[in-house]
Length: 156
Image (tube, rainbow, N blue to C red; front, side, top):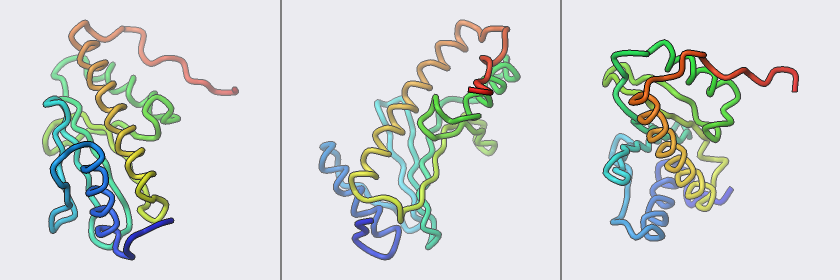
């Protein structure tokens, strides 16, 4: 697709600059490690990473600290959501063990994107992460339901 460069980091930097301009943000650029962090609504931390020459774009959102209680119910629910990735637009739930955070992550080949695809992917990822962050925070404050994950759509 319309890559401004054969270097994946250069392509993503170009798209980040366009995204920043469209969103009224100060210029965004990957650092020397191929990483940038964004703060969204003072509530959500997003990492964008394009490591080396792998040609992969990683999006990660730190949703919340791993809760001290009701972990099994939460993990069962999130694994069920990961099954077909429908409730999270292709992203998957994960645990950042180093920082003890519940995260949402997504990986895409840079070669399959252009500037418009990148902007849409990032906007959708942010929207999904904000929605899940709010939903999980509310559910954990109220106590997760005891009935486990919703039934899975086998045989449809």
